[in-house]
Length: 429
Image 1 (tube, rainbow, N blue to C red):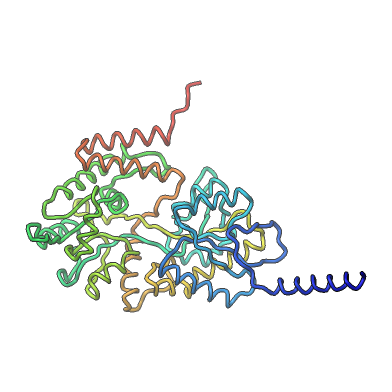
Image 2 (image 1 turned 90 degrees about the horizontal axis):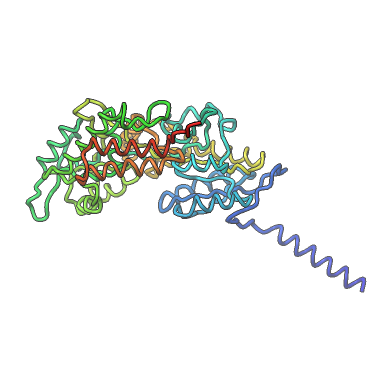
């Protein structure tokens, strides 16, 4: 009996030793233990796909070769369910250690305690290399001040794309752009040719509201659409109506699919689009792709202020002290010049001012344009009220473009709804 017991114990010891030698398998929701004495693999959730996902994988492989402690394990999560899964995991006391998310999620996740404030973990020397607009998109302002909840890795913003086979120089202002667009159009042809095709969506055109001196909020965060921002907002809506009604320009808000189809079928010469779409235009126009900052608004002489979207790395608020240090080390790697250059070579726009973009590769030529656009742009809003505000501005724009109301009345109604929902009047004592 004693011999049998010894044999069994020996077998258990051998099996345990074999199990400990296996590579750890990533878990979708590892439990995060506070005050961990050592740092094992760090799970990073992300929603990148295609070539972007491949570039991220290469960067993680490179980082893991250089660091044996706190190695990064990637897990792709669909963006449609990402935020809900993250909140559920953190509420259950687990979740990923690191998350790579759009900056627009920062406010809501910070308010619910999901994200760790990073001001004390982010060295100023490295943070100062980031473009200010990308950093602003990762900060949250409240009554206590401004806190950083994510570190920007890449950005996305708008520019003017044009076919250099038809247009050797980009228009510097909107009046020139419209004149060229009309001159190159032939709407009577079969199929029609468009010198300028514009998707008049909220995200694509909001930069020109600011060029008209329109405002949605004042510097203190109070609704200003119908007060100090009224004149500019009304002019912006009237301008969009004129674009939509111009028979020699393809400009649509309710049928953006039509604009996309005409572009992709090679029947349009100029348009506004996002940096991440550059591959589409290279496939469409080859080496004849031209890219320039959005033209200045002729009516005011001001440059538009397009939105700048940012993807940021954030840390789970439940991470232990050692895990936070290891996660911050990976974040510093991702904003290093080495990593940012790899993103640039993969047609992503680096959030850092490094690399310096002095070369003549197609990626660097395009990146110089997008950096100029970003430097004059505005961070994509990230507050928990962002969706509500966006819905109201879209509604205002849609009603004016459909002719359901005048620009003045559309602004008045949008201002009223925003005030009712964001600035409720306190009940009388």
